[in-house]
Length: 202
Image (cartoon, rainbow, N blue to C red; front, side):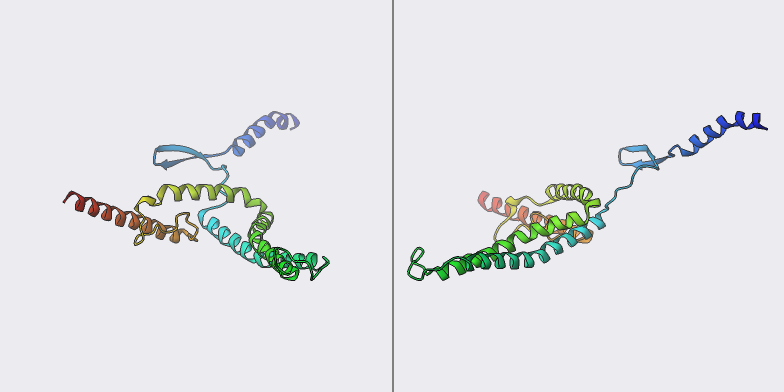
């Protein structure tokens, strides 16, 4: 019995290795047929997930602008309130209180401008698992935008180029609408260009 167990052990090991091997399946591609392993990692972020994360990130950026503005305003007020004020001295002909008040407001505006960047960083930290996938998907998205947007030379006062950077695209259906607007912009621009050349020839 022991001899039989020892002799069958290589067979068992071979069977286990065979079961653990990745299976291959045949898939149809535009360039023909190819084999694809079933153990290949799937894309961690599809286009629907990309647009969802993009909307969430933009929300975080907007929400971070207000507290950053308040922090900048508070920091500026604390700094300038601690400075001594001499009413007899002026700064470029202005009262020091006016200058300090303007500088405090500038600190608040600066915090409001920096806030979206802070919100973007916070969002990346909170979603660090998908941050790299989001960057890769965003790069591919902008490649699609650059490849499919209309020629800016067709633009005019009556035919402006719609959403040059694709910032208003929030979903796949929104991307399709964006494509239709780009083609419509091209059609109008080509028609006007042809009409202008026809008038010149006449």
